[in-house]
Length: 206
Image 1 (cartoon, rainbow, N blue to C red):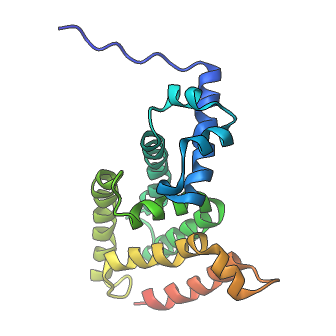
Image 2 (cartoon, helix red, strand yellow; image 1 turned 90 degrees about the vertical axis):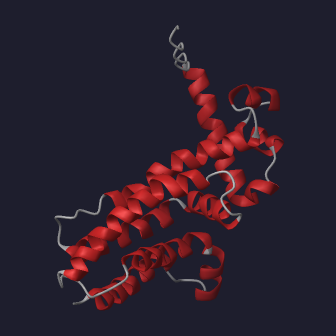
């Protein structure tokens, strides 16, 4: 039985076109959602013909999954960085700040993921039930041990993580609403960081 031939590395032009397609798709999907986005829109935004786009990705779904797979590693990195040997409250507060910074720097990625989940994650449920759940289970155990040792207040570790997601990603997913309600001259992310620091400092105090 012969071994499968490994895929040939992409040329510089192929890498450039792949990156252009994914960047264009991120813009289109985050604005239109999966159902509203079309291959024609993505090809136009990437500066490619539709047949050229289909040379790299066979379908709209394939592009969407490639984006989500690339995003998952980035999305989980701040939680992975939570150090079990660190000072508990500082580690949790650091995670909150990193998530808020990601919402400020990567709003399109946040909306892409949110849209997928709101639809029931039909194209990415394995990633959520796999890598994401495994990591959350691991870090929830760490937080639970900190609480049991009296190093932080007794909290449900899963709902603590969920609350950090909700209270940071809101500023990306509902940016228009936040800015409209706050009005001109306000700094949503700077204000959010100060508020969330106070909130979690009080919540976590043993």
